[in-house]
Structure formats: structure tokens, C-alpha cells
Image (cartoon, rainbow, N blue to C red):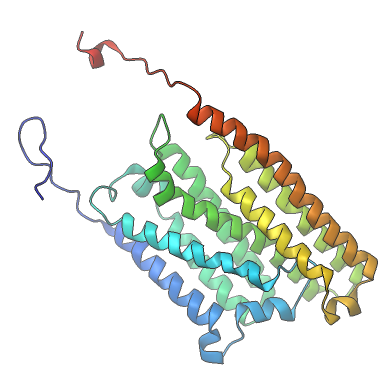
Length: 300
């Protein structure tokens, strides 16, 4: 297929790949390798799997095992990002070169540190690392906001280059609060302090959901609130049949209180989400966009 022609009849050459494009792809491959071989396989059973460590140091806000399935679509959509940003039509876009920048690399780098530290049960290091990964991902989303396509939102740009990171950010929010709870389980044997840490961590996800629904300059995004609802449900359901470890540590009333609080927070986010979705649908599909042309664009 011939390259597109410019107005003067010359063919437009595709922008060559640069170091950032290669780095994003290599970073994704390395992140997949570490996530699968260390987090999922435990280096061939030489290290404990991440899920097993989570269950070993179980807290009241440790999600059910099925909640970790969310990591699969994150890797799939980030694979789409890693491949799409190599293509000629996208590789030089500002949302890649300036918006994503090196934030994806830094996020995956500190996430690798987190995975390794967590496998070796170095919980202070793992908490700092996951918090740094969350901050880096939040910076990536903020940076992308300033370099996205202006005017009406580009669905292609959103699904290829922004959606994967919203999904990843939502998961990092859950991981951060769980790591916070685990940290206090590691630092103190005082059950009252552990319970307080669990309650604080449980409530910390609510402001994040509220911000992405109401506080974003670019308008609401529903991915992170949906991930947080998923997280609250994943926390609440196992508490209907708590493990022997939790029953030996906490009073039954404490377990019920945390379980019901998780359901309450999930419903709260859902009640905020529904009207925002309705408003978004009306704004996107039931309004007319008026474009004002200047004299130069009209040829006057």
C-alpha cells in the first residue's frame, strides 16, 4: 500500500521508531516475565506465589482469590498498548512521546521491585514500592491528560493508550491499601492497631473513586470506580466464611463490621457512578457539538 500523499504530491514518510517506543515494548515484556515467573509461578516453586503470600498474611481487607483475575486483562490491554505504540500511525503521537513518556517504564520498574520484595516478604520495601508505582501511574494519567487529542474524545486513543493505564491504576490502588494493612500486620501484634489499619485502608479507596467520578479536569472516568467496586466486593464476600486465622485474631463482630462496611462503600460508589453514567450518555449522544471556524479555516 502506497504511503499517503501530501498536498504538494510528495509521499509522507512514516516517523521512525525511537528509543521510547522500543523501551515501552521491552518494559512490557520484562513486566510480563516478572509478573508471571515470580508472581504467578514463584520461580518454579523456588519462591512463594504472590497470592499465597497474600493469604499467608491475610488481613480483613485481603480480597478473594478470584479478585486477582483482574491482572489478566491489565496485561492483555497493556500488550495492545505496547504493540500499537510501535505502529506508524501512533508511534509519534504526543500522548505517547510526551504524555506516556517514561512513566510506564518507571511504573513497571518499581512494580518489579514490589513483586520481588513481596515474594521475599520484605513488606516495608514492598509497601514503598507499590506506593511509588501508584504515584508513577497517577503521574502518567495526569500527563496524558495534557497531550490527548483535543476536542471530542478520540475513542481509538482512549482504548489503546489510556484505558490500560486506568485499569492498572485501579488495581494499584487496591494493592496499595492491602499492602498498607499487611504492613501493620508485620509491624505490630496489637490487634486493635491492626483493625484500625484495616478500617483506614478500606475507607481510603472511596476518595479515589470520588475523584475519578467528579474531580478530574478531563471529566469522569468509570474504569477506576468500577475496579474499586470490584475490590470492595472481593473484600466483603470472603468475610461471610472467614478463615481460621481471622477467627482466631478478631471478634466475630469486628469481621461483620468490616464486611458490611465494604458492602456499604461499594454501594456508595455505585450510587455515585449511576448518575454520572447517565449524564455522560446524554452529553456524548444527545447534544450537538458546535465548532467555531476562524477566518483562515474558512478561506476568507
